[in-house]
Amino acid sequence: MLRREQGIVLRGFPFGEADRIVVFVSPNQGQLRAVARGVRRTKSRFGGRLEPLTHVDLVLYQGRNLPTITQVSVIEPFPRLRNELDAVLVAGSMAEVIGKVVVEGEPSHRLFLLLQRGLQALENGAGGLDLVASFLLKLMDALGQAPALRWCAACGGDGPLERFSVAGGGLLCVRCDSGSSFRLRQGLTAYLAGLATSDLSGFTGGDGPMAGDAVGLARRFVEFHIETGLSGLAYGSLNGG
Image 1 (cartoon, rainbow, N blue to C red):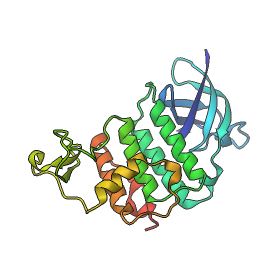
Image 2 (cartoon, one colour):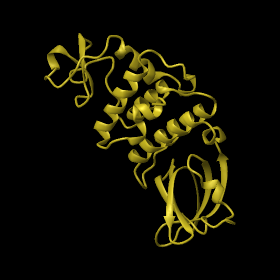
Image 3 (cartoon, rainbow, N blue to C red):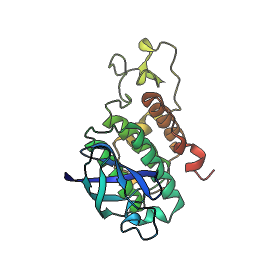
Image 4 (cartoon, rainbow, N blue to C red):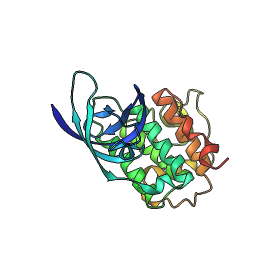
């Protein structure tokens, strides 16, 4: 049985002598794995179209096990992501975290569109730590676990909001603080709230003064709630360090 899907390539790994298993994020199928037959041979007819961070249209043959790719055409190649190191690092980090949260076989429209918008923003010249932090905050919102940045995560009250708890879901008022929270740098709460609602295409790489704190906290929040580390989001690797 043949079926059609679209997806963004997250990664691939060898399978047998000449084949490759390619992992996509698809709006309809979530994390999708498919076999590209003979793609590791020099004369493969579509190997170059299955590079990571490529948005493709696929025709798949569904056999007993993994589907086999029979046709592939490129929708968006994102060529800038192949040539600029900073863009490659940020795009790779986006793909890593999406790959950790998208579930195989479950529709993931919001997460697919978030990754697509992130890659389009990078392709059009956006970048920087503010972009990464904004992407992570939007990711948690898509998962239904956005941090509370304007009210108390425990009681819903509006203040005074002086502490932040990663485990507790965001800001806490004095009455709800159980001692596991910490005080944020002054102005960081409003800064994070702005990043959470900003358009990804608006980040030109001129990071604000709190960008490092913002991406560090966003990363910590994501890692705690998805219960896994994010190696590609190390501050130094995204900041040239």
